[in-house]
Structures are given as structure tokens and as C-alpha cells.
Length: 220
Length: 108
Image (cartoon, rainbow over all chains, first blue to last red; front, side, top):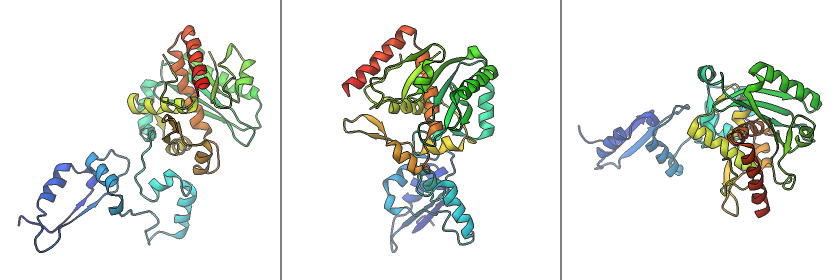
């Protein structure tokens, strides 16, 4: 039989465009209007471009199967998904509702085992920088992040109640752990610039644009 | 030379742009255990502002999407990454960078 009236393609996102095209070529249409059904549950592995393009170009023809549709899971489980992924967030749309979300940053996330492999080579003997986002007037935390050129290596979160001496002590701990000479720069946000004035050879970029700016301080 | 190019609306979007480019073209890795950064970056999106420049969606909107908290970790991450752009420069270039930022904000 060389003619088909309907075909379904499972794991379509991982099939090549040739398979899709060849199958479509057989749908010549006679007594029945030919139908194509593609099924896929992409899970982070890069998918084929033709499939992505098809999904994006035909939003009205996509039926999303969400984690909430499954009648065999409990209401408690479904509620926990809403709480964990925060209803309405992009992550919720992707992980729970199964929508295709594109952000510029998604390729940064790697699994721990991959990260360890990456980190083994990259984290050693490479130059590093620290970024500090100081707690504002609200209930924010002060976050200190240490990176090298290719990976995020360390993170320290301090409660907004902690004073700035604690920040200095944490920086010194990082310097001891990674080597003082390895850390080339510490970049502060706008809130931290007054603190930075009293710490080391601090440079203020300018306060002219403070209302519009983010990064205001830099020292090495 | 690090520069606040004409494509970004302010230093904040410039820094996130640097991170995005670094991830896209050079490869920058964040362990998956850093769930907060994952969530913050996923919900940080670029838009075009009224001048056609690359801008970020308002921080308030990001806060709302990630559960009424501030994207502190991704902010700190971007600040840290900015350090490398500045590190590539000499002290003279740093002065030039500051001037460039001044001119950008005066222009805007």
C-alpha cells in the first residue's frame, strides 16, 4: 500500500524532517481528507528545527497535554506543582502546562553531573569575579556570586539583617577558598556603592545616572 | 573593550545582554541546583523599548512572575559577569568605559 489517509508520528521533535516530508508525500488524498498527527514530549534535549517551526507557526493546531490533565494523579500533587513552579510563571508554563518557552538563558542550565565535569576543568586556575547584589530597603537578601569566565562557581546569600562586616568576611572567605589573586574584580550594585567607598581601592563610576543604573561600583 | 553599546537601553539590560551572549556563544554554565537563578533567568525577557533599544521587561513584572521576590541572584550573577568585561580593559580603558556610560545616560 503506497497511499495513506492518516499518519501519526511519535516523538516527532526528534525525527528528521525527511521522515515527516516522505510521509506527507504519501498523503495524496482520495476518498478521505488526509490527516497528520504529531506527538512529542520534548524534555530539554535539543529538538529539530522543522518541528519547532511547525509548532510556532501553527499555535491554533497545537493541543498541549499538561500535568494537570492526568486523571490518575491526585489533587494534592497538582496543587504542589502550582506551588512549586508558581502559577503563571514561565517555568510553570513550560514544566506544568507543556508550552514551548523560549528565553535567551535556557541553555545555561546544566545538570549537576555535567556541571561537575565542566567545573573540573574550568574552575581551576582561571580568573574569577565576584558580583554583589546588596539588600535594599525591603526584605531582599544580599547575594554574593562568584564566577569564572565559563561557570557560576559559588553563591552566598546573606539576610538583609546582616551588616556589611559580614559581607567583608564572606568575601575574605571566598578569597581564601579560591585564591586572593585569582579574584580580579568585585562589582557592586547601586545600593552597595556607599559601602564600597570604605572598602579597598573602590571606584565610583558616577552617581549621575543612579536612578537609571544598576551597576555603580567596581574595585579590584 | 567593554562598551555600553547603542543596542541596550540601560546598564541593567546591557549586563543581562552580556550574560545572554556569553551563554549563547561562549557557553556559560549554571548548576541545576541553583533553582532560583534558573527561575529568575527564565522569567527575564528582552523587549524593544520605544527607541528600539534592547531592554528588559520591568523588574516589578519579573518579581511578580517569580513569586514576589527580587531576582537577587541573577542580578549578582550579571554583575559578576560584567567584571570580566571590565577586566579585559586597562585602567585607561576603564576610564573610557565610565565616560561611555556617562555619554549613554546623558544621551538618554
